[in-house]
Length: 338
Figure 1 (cartoon, rainbow, N blue to C red):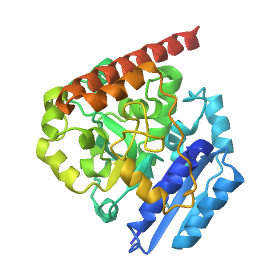
Figure 2: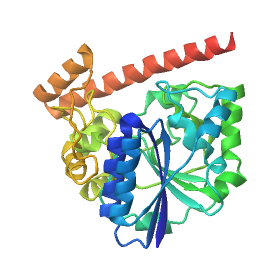
Figure 3: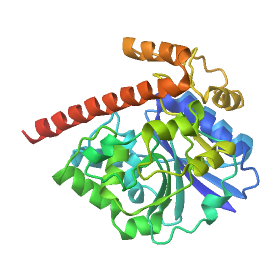
Figure 4: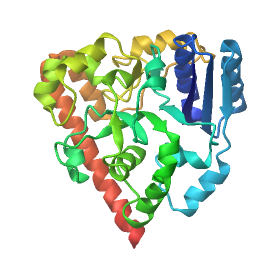
């Protein structure tokens, strides 16, 4: 049994990616072969050596993919950056980077922990779908603004299972580039929105345990569904099953912080610390987040209020953030056409 896995990150995220890779290796020792492809951006020699050390320790192959030519092409296509980096969208152009020996490919965000076996993802039937993903736990109104109905699924891009032959056959990368050029280049969640919009109807739904999101650790399923409703989302029992045995934890920002911040209240903090200590980046020193006043207030309220009450504030804060981000991206779109 073998598996190909893709990570993409810049120097800032190297310790978190290194932690994720160790968690993957620790819990999948039974695989005959694990090949890690790293799409790195401005990685330091120290980070590269630590990642190479990780591969040697577990006797696994780690391949650093040169992205220089692709970034130049993305610049020529006027692909948008995200926080000044092209890293977010590089994986959308995979066929130009990886050869035909790569068929099924698992992409993992750097802010993930693999705490279980990945066997099922190598065996699960994907039919004629080019990609498979887990539904996003927070998006409600945003997908309506993107033109989706309440009944249509909207996926989180932190974990993506690619069927590369089908991806190439359907020319998904070319369609994304054309969309950016002729329809819209700037989105609040660049790669995630692009994947959902351009590959609409062509993404298979994975069980929530393969991208278990922090809101389901912080709040009960009852509170979640009462607050967020059931807009084409998983059933409560599916969330409950995922909570019993998550395979991939995805710890995106929660009340303004990540598990790598000092004194964070993130529900994934303990499991992150567990694998950070086993990684080649175990000397990482947590620093306070640079959260503004609003996020500091949100953190305080999370400490003080009952969870069943706070979740409504959490939802309102997120929807305000994504609304503002959408307005900003629309402005960038208009300015880009002038």
